[in-house]
Amino acid sequence: MASLKALKIRIGSVKSTQKITKAMKTVAAAKLRRATEAAVAARPYASRLEAVMASLAATVTLSDSSPKLLTGNGKDQVHLLVVATSERGLAGGFNTNIVRLARRKADELIAQGKTVRFYLAGRKARVLARFYPAMIHHDRDMSGHRTPGFAIANDLAADLIARFDAGEFDVAHLFYSNFRSALVQEPVAQQIIPVPLVASDAAKNDASVEYEPDEESILADLLPRNIAIQLYRAMLENNAGFYGAQMTAMDNATRNAGDMINRLTIQYNRTRQAAITTELVEIISGAEAL
Image (cartoon, rainbow, N blue to C red):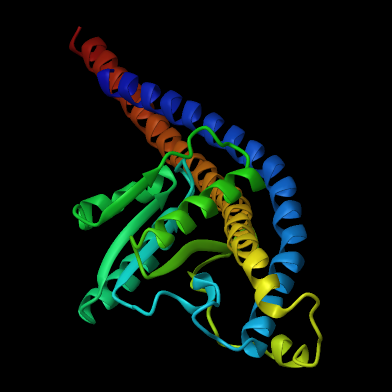
């Protein structure tokens, strides 16, 4: 009977877990729609601004007076890896995939003799401290920001630019997850400081555009904004990707809980049947003995 009691308790426990995972799936699905709309709406502006930056970079004549965010500081030794993850887990491999990509880049740079530092933006990125304890340059607390806002991205951009101007690093790379669908989130790496000088097709098509005022004046104003916009896009993509991954993970967990409940129920019924059969045999044997 003790076995039956243990099985009954376990079935009840799994049912309680199933209720939680089902509720979390419902909440994630509801939040996913808004997060997806925000991420998709931000893409055209961010992509177009990136193309304008490439166009300007392709036409401007680089000189000592050019913005350092475009030309760099002339060095390529210290690389800052900005790793943006979510604050919460229970989302499958969402955060793990971002961290894995950042680790791959870090190991690649270290093998080339570069100095690597990490700028963490998201609680789940702190796992990097286990692998690179001496390389965590800054751990940005994002716990107070449940919903991504441009003000947060602008603040992050200002902090990164200030650190760049202070000579704390030479190149900055941003790591986040690009939202494709609820089932697919693609971790990506993007250089944000200095702005890459590789002209895109869109930039080539814009090569005949005349800028007023001159390109360098526009660049000085747009370069910081571009960094903030790219950070904002990363935050929105991460937000949508997180809810998509969490919805999928909770759906799988709910299904697995249902399968486990079925297996435990079958085991419970078989054990109960065996116990009843044993009692009947004992009663019949006792009656025959009389």
